Length: 264
Image (cartoon, rainbow, N blue to C red; front, side):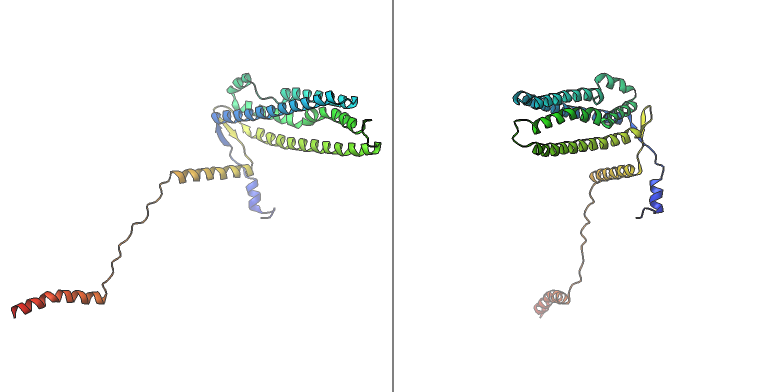
């Protein structure tokens, strides 16, 4: 199908009726989203604890002052990230959940927007705090006087490590930007107040939703449908053959011949 197909253009420009969702379903969506946020934060806190423990051990065992300063800066950056994650990306508290019960749609939309804004600025509060410590730590490892490698070889060791760090930072920023874009699209769909909430879908997502609903309904109908009975076997009557008719006549003729012989 070409890009200039009138049917495709008509399908993409159609006005779709919003999907109505009850407040119980909205409440379930909000609780699942908060559960995912808590799981993500627990993983982030665990990773930060590992980073703090590892670089604290390096700061104690490595005698080089520059390396110790870099490790201390990395620990400070990890603590700052944990604080900003709790401030910007934390899950909703019990009091906020109770307050959101008056309007679950508005509460869920506000939570989606808050997490989207946190992910959009991840470069400033999640990535940037580690840059000074990583640069100092890498420079201390590459240019330490105890390193037997020459100065130029130290630069050859410093720049590849810096490039790997930049690549990792770029991947982390790109992944968070993708998630932020998805959260923004989800927050735009939730509209309505009262006992029902309307959720808007794009043509692609609406087609995907309809397809999944048809698949679920077909599975349910096939599970509830009684299998048809097998067709009854039909009895087929066959005409007797010529040999069978002659044998039947001979059997019937025997009593008549016996009676005729007894009369004689």
